[in-house]
Image (cartoon, rainbow, N blue to C red; front, side, top):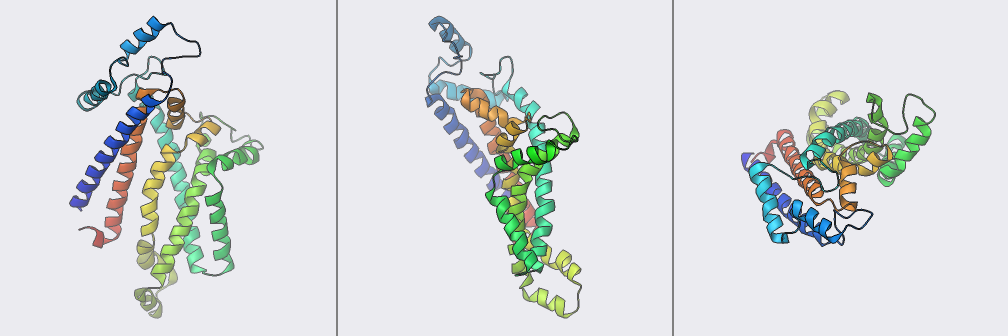
Length: 305
């Protein structure tokens, strides 16, 4: 198990270094300057600003300075687009919001998808099975940016308890979390159904049924652990994807999470903020995969070597 963890950590570090390095040079190859506003600056002012942020140096030197500050000082630098704010400060303020939204969306996805998949497997080739899988297919095919406005129109507008947009009350997390969680629920339902059908066809399940073991006990004590392995494999990257890919929903519902900063950093060529976000997202994805590996080893002892 320890060998697997070390291997995953090394893979994560290599991937993150490559990802951040690619982002560092790719964003600088794009035309335009992050310091150029709507009005053109005088050449001497432009040069002074670039010198203040170290953008007047060659790319290779900037690259070395970036990694030196990051590794030895833990400094991601100041944001080029949000004045008087450090990148770490921006991420520290917005990440808890994205984390809260992601956790609630994940709980909704598991809470809806897991029972739906189990019931569909138990009612195989029946009306319940076909109906639940059709609903799951709709959840997969309809993107979150379509579900979000529909929830605003059908739920937030007629019900005063919900707001169309904003992030100032506990209930404000519900609608954007539902919009993100529906897709997760659909995948969880289909994966759980497939895993459950495979496990239910095993000989030891038939033996348990022949001995008269109640169906509920067969599911909870014998079948569920093996059936959810594909689901657990999916949930780790899915959680990271919810946090990193929620910028559309955050924009629709005006949620002050990290997604909005990622979009603004790309459009505004905010080099330092974009590098910090890519670094964070890479570590988040690697950490999610590591947690999945540990969870799978806990579920399946054969994976502990």
